[in-house]
Image (tube, rainbow, N blue to C red; front, side):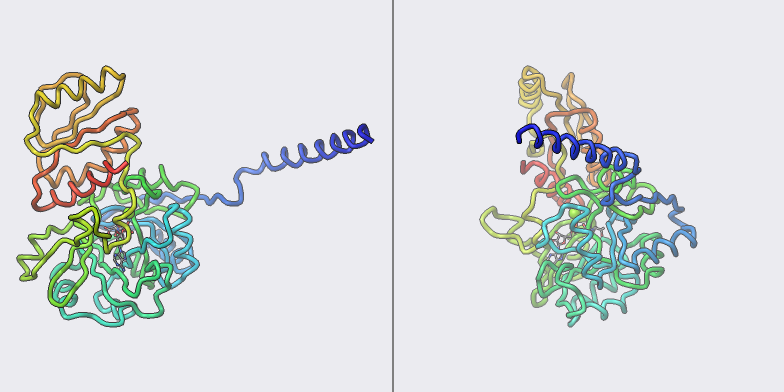
Length: 367
Ligand code: TXA
Ligand code: MG
């Protein structure tokens, strides 16, 4: 009996081996998708490529595209199944809603049930641009887009390729940043491919993003603006436009739950651990810290807006908050490739884009 069994098992084993061999000859697993990489001229994107990418979106596929902030991972916002694929490709928690992109102000009517007066003023002044406005949603917007919320976040990106894609697709496009969940947002097509090659249908590559941090997300409460996520549009700009602006309590205090669900997750994180320092942190203390890390055989990098007279640490000095915003996520990825263990970041001044930079650095530090 024992023998027979082992004989049979041997036979089955052979069969399986043959099957395995056949499988191995197949170039790709079923779950893998060939990701097209289309180079396009930002100013004059190739019409054929844009039409092709637009048709893919309309037909429920995933296409990553450049915006002025970061690269987005787009799907037809009115197709619940397509939107679900975004979450799968990113490995993103399903209660974290995504932003819907439109090409023309009038298209907001397709997805918003009510448009508060303040939203009209904001859109007129800041669109296309790095501002996302949260408004009550229409029922055509699937719950998978909004994570079950009754509101939808809308923005018109300021990038010729994004706008051309939106026009070609002829549907609103749901698009979170095109990174794997917990990785830094992609500011180049290369970053998208590092994270999502084989998981999405294509990426439109128009070079590095101009701003480098994601849009500012605002909710409208009476006539006040509540900033749910500081981003590419400075709060001062909103104030200059005559609005009373406040930061969501979740941004300020640890005990308050943030209203923007995405803000509660670990985010923008490099592999290295990140530590933050107040502006003007004394050099001798920084030197001692670096020394201690190096004693433990750790590779250290310092990112800041000043020079440090410290040896043996990788250092980058940004000229201003704009440069830091534009390059921070790319620098995180480069430092990972350099096998950096610890990234020490000195805060940017808490004005203009500095607010967004400090917010992203803080998220990266929440390991
Ligand atoms: O610049 C950007 O905003 C980029 C580009 C691609 O447009 N997109 C982006 O998307 O950063 P994502 O999904 O990575 O971030 C969207 C943020 C999250 O913090 C999310 O929680 C918040 O917006 N959000 C989306 N819908 C919301 C809603 N209905 N209410 C409150 N927050 C919302
Ligand atoms: Mg994101």
